[in-house]
Image (cartoon, rainbow, N blue to C red; front, side, top):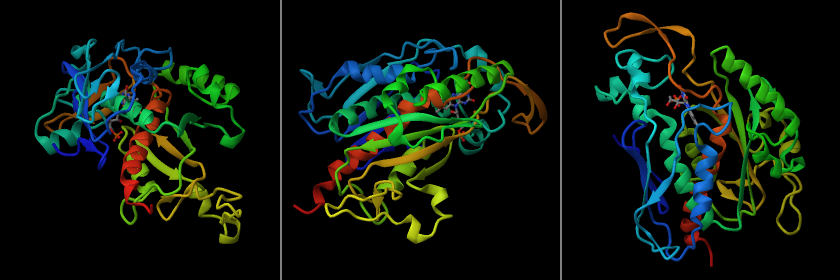
Length: 354
Ligand SMILES: Cc1cc2nc3c(=O)[nH]c(=O)nc-3n(C[C@H](O)[C@H](O)[C@H](O)COP(=O)(O)O)c2cc1C
């Protein structure tokens, strides 16, 4: 299985399955001498962990990260940072029903076809449990990026969509509601909607908006490793993500160039920011902002037609503890992946002009 590492210089490899003894990772390329606040790393993990509110999966995992290397006397040593999060709440019996049958729109069928064999417990490697390791790595990247501010929040749940521009929002409100919506009134409606969907035994999708402030000019490596291309890859690598748009995104395609252009000020800043802080694949010093669309996840507590591994038709109903809507827990994952991309480009920017 390839594809378990991310980043060129600031590189993370993750390992582990949902119901194995542990998940974790190795970060290679984090510069030496960065003072790390380990409590802050744990706090980021707590934002992702299951069971944190009534509108997420009720799986109870303490998700405590343990570091094994690369940190000494509170600072990075420049050597690989190895870490693990032990799995303590596996209920593999919840997953017997997917051993020989395929959940529609999950990864069971393709894993079986590709590898001929799969760890079906909790979805194995295809489970979003893997993203906890990304959150740890991203929390370290965030500390390396001190000065930059990465803020993600839920901007839509199903048909409920925020229309307010991010500049009019108070990001301090994000962590004050279980949905992690930056509009407290909308947050209540979204929460009620998710509860209703859960009662129906169904799931619902949503959108996360991410804003990155205080970005220096010059991050991004054209032609193939453009900043937005790497952000897009990072976001699309998160489980259940179906869409990525930055700046004016798809709406920009309906505008005329004369309306869409961002006029310059004499200091190189721009009067508008439809470019989303990136031009030619390089950050231009304005805020970077993008949207990430998540699907309604596959496991619904309703009977659905599917097939077993012999190609026979069977009926399957979701069992176990699942998320009715993943966006509240995915907010720290989006921030973590954004931090990993920017940390990598910060190291790569050494080839910029002096
Ligand atoms: C934070 C988070 C939690 C998730 N929880 C569930 C879940 O409880 N049940 C489920 O079926 N899928 C869940 N998913 C989505 C699956 O991991 C994902 O749909 C699956 O791996 C198939 O990949 P794909 O949807 O990207 O094609 C979750 C995703 C995220 C980001």
